[in-house]
Image 1 (cartoon, rainbow, N blue to C red):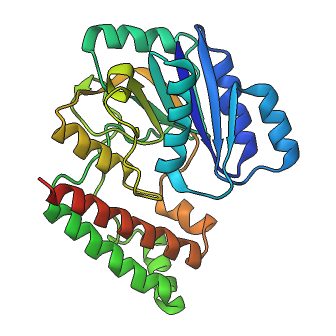
Image 2: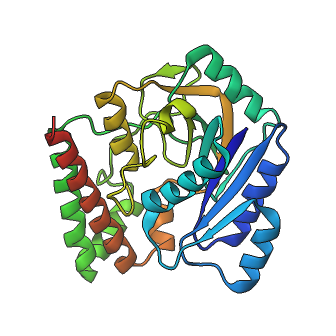
Image 3: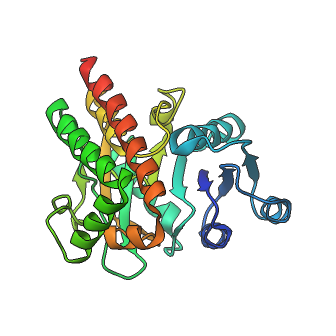
Length: 281
């Protein structure tokens, strides 16, 4: 049996669509939704009809902590063979998705499995994830994010940054790896969809490092994979659709300067946590 943990935040229609896509899959499954304090009473009643468990948090505790609560409930109640942790803005369209996971596990004995991730617009998305591999890379990223904070704190500098992004300036990160056509081993995996085997969740109290609020959970997970000699697999044999756009242009269109400032400050906090974890070795 497979347990799905869906982290819900605000967009209820995406969550409904995600749940319906899971219900169509062949094989035994349980669906757990964790809400980061955004549902109203009507939405709660509707979701309670649709899923096996609904966890309504009293405050937004972020990605890692909220998903950990869902995973802990799944393990306690169901002892599943696999935990599938996915964002609410994803949909699964392979009816034999669960069978494919089982077949990949029989062949690879993975601790963590990542699928091929397709963007809604069909341009593809990132997996395997490109991680920060050492403290020097983390420090470089921290300095980059601190520069962005200065831009976001100033209306004038923010306007200039926005202008450069729209005119395709080089004030962007290097291109990351695209979805591969071949299976890859011991790689970092994108956080919008992760599949954990029983042998993984049996080793840890928390599926994710519990210290971050948002961002770089993938890097922390990859650091755990490397440190504890776990086996991660990227397989294009399984796939899902991720509706979120990946470009900075979309981000600027949908986000205010203050939201971007908050986002960047949270990224820096997560990077500092990652640096501390790396320094322990």
